[in-house]
Length: 124
Image (cartoon, rainbow, N blue to C red; front, side):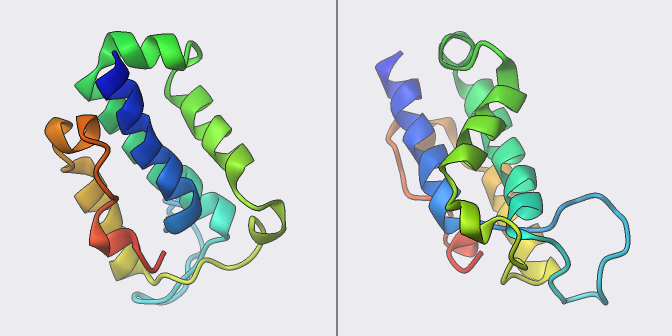
């Protein structure tokens, strides 16, 4: 259990270092432009990472987040600096998509080893 819960630190690092697209499919800017607030894009990327952590350790994840993925996402959003949540996210669509893709493909061994988030998420 400690290894999977330690992997949640990766999720926590994302609370400070990642952003992305809201994924709402509506009214975004032209391809390659940012079109969501920090909160919107963080929710998308936190969702991806929380789902990935849950897949690697469902029992441990359920114990840490009894309300599931949404509880994980909500907890991470609470850790974001409040003054930044309404700001535009710095990443464009391609950067957000790359980060999201890479988060979906983080290996369970990396999560258990508390690895750093993918480099594609650094700017966001």
